[in-house]
Image 1 (cartoon, rainbow, N blue to C red):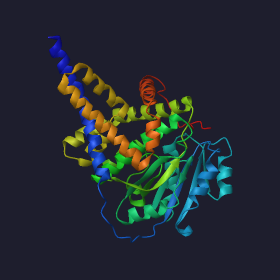
Image 2: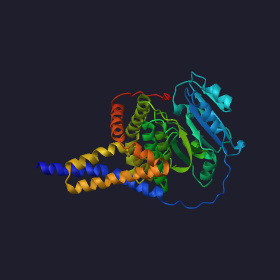
Image 3: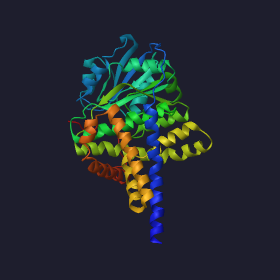
Image 4: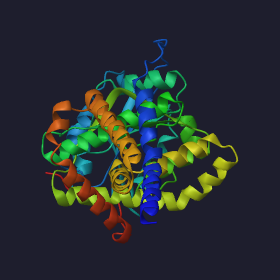
Length: 384
């Protein structure tokens, strides 16, 4: 009897892990598929680069300088910094560097700040709006790449979102690996499969048409995930491109990393509770965009997939253990390919010994995010 129960548990845990792992394998293959050649013609669109900032005095000057150094016609773009409830000299530094500055007071929040800025910018003659975090550097060809994508029909585009300080610590090196997967290889594969890549809060561009039809009424602590769902419910998918990047500064300390991770995990859980039911019902009616959004929000972090695989190997027989091993190999290949294309293979091997501790830490943060810090606002992540 005990042996039968153990075997059943082994198969259950294996099935739980197999669904997301096979999805990882599918998007990995799709991401590596050669892209079709396209016409080089563009429309020379006009862009507003929008930088929401809350007390970002440390890095705002670099961010604005990079945004104003684009390989693009100066008359076809401007840089706008939203100094949202700032109590430091963010606004002054941004003006010195040449940005147009909107100083906002009122209920704080990145979503609220963006909605406020877009309300005014839509009255001007901009074709599209690129959102860049105040701690990030834009690749010099970012607007040129966006112009190409949108000239070929894309209404929402996500640039690759990468880390600018992977060498600072073993923790930032691990973040580089995670972002190579979550912010690059996976959205590349989703986009290649005709799905929506998702938007990641930094380096995403919205066409005028999409923004007019889907106002930026996303005010949760993960307003990017929320707004992506709003876009999909209105029939707008996001196209991913890795031909240009935004590079963000990531925290190196344990406490700052914990604060940032709790915000992400807590926000994702709130999104699932708020939208999963509606998306599931729409999916049953044949709405492919709702199914796309549902698959995006329900895909668990790789951290959580490891545990059912270990449990399957613990409870299962030889067959289950072999299958669990194959699933582990698929995950390993996924991260190896992500490192080769978007990260550092040398870094991947360097963090090998750190991974078990990192997984435990991420799991602990995930648990904490479920039971504490329920009222998380838009707080600047502390950086060195």
